[in-house]
Length: 182
Image (cartoon, rainbow, N blue to C red; front, side, top):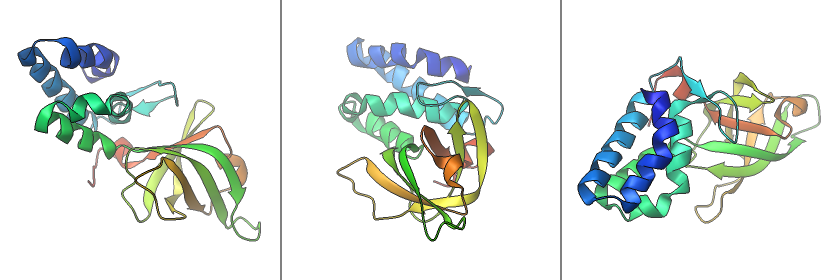
């Protein structure tokens, strides 16, 4: 059922936006259930415009973030759903440079952050050229993140520049494990 929720998300969003209020509330409930239960589904991933094999919850969160104004205007349930979607962050690498003296110390990746990075160091998975690679290292903000801009720089200690170079996408690996530490 949940892979269908990702495909149906645009339809459910149209119901929230244009449908009868009772139908909109039902559509919000379906989106909420799909986001909550998809976190534990380790078997199913979908292709998105940003990456291949994206966990269902992250793909659905991407749909929800693109319609943030709609959810903000949909009352407490819509705002809560939007806040839940923010935990499923995505980082699109636009530029990467070697961090340190070039002996494999790590990479500083510059790019665009969607969602809310929880702070500290986080486990992540790398999506690049149709492949998903769990990173043996964790990522952390290189500089403090701004709530006013999606531009960010993440430090990826122990990573190789060739692995992180654009086009690469980082997603939280806890979505794949089914264990949400939110």
